[in-house]
View (cartoon, rainbow, N blue to C red):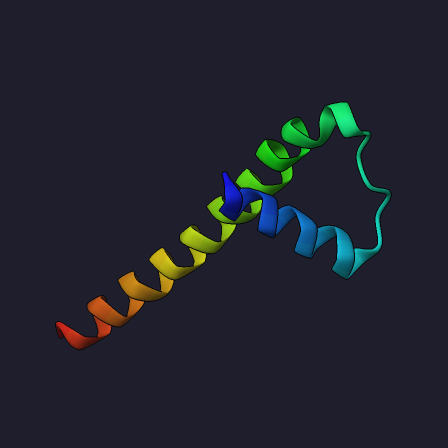
Length: 57
């Protein structure tokens, strides 16, 4: 959960969006942080797959 909170805080600080209300911080961490984590893991997965497919020729 700390990773999602870190990703959310980084996103909010980078793009300057309005911070969520104190009661909704957990939901924002799950939604924003989860989406960013999925995108990052997906990007690394695609790069890894491409490197693997190029090197296995």
